[in-house]
Amino acid sequence: MTDQTITIDGQPVPLDDVIWLERHPCGCVVSGVVAVVADEWTLTTTDDAARHIHDTDGERQRAAGQGLTFAPVTGLRYRTEFADSWRCDRHARPASAQRDRWSRNPRRKAARTQEKPDAVSARR
Ligand SMILES: [Zn+2]
Image (tube, rainbow, N blue to C red):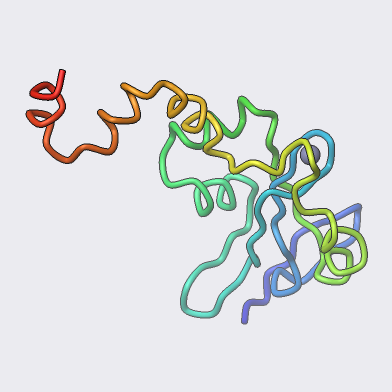
């Protein structure tokens, strides 16, 4: 529990009732996290949420480059407006879709999946 509030649409909302949603520009949701988990985390800003979801600067930059943004919503608004808005058809593929593109190159896939680089070169 926390006494903190943040402002959503001009209204103070208890942070305990806030969910951070990461969404594409089209509006579909790709990730979400509750703002407060007792003794675990308290996420008060979009930056906090981004750092919670994406481990590295590179991941955060890649997500931002895809137009993904974080915004706070109340639990009620999540349940009534966003709970059914996860990944639209266009964004149904995982955020790591770039890696899927790589794996169409069989040689690169072999290099990725082989544990021993020596074994790969020996087969060529
Ligand atoms: Zn979408």
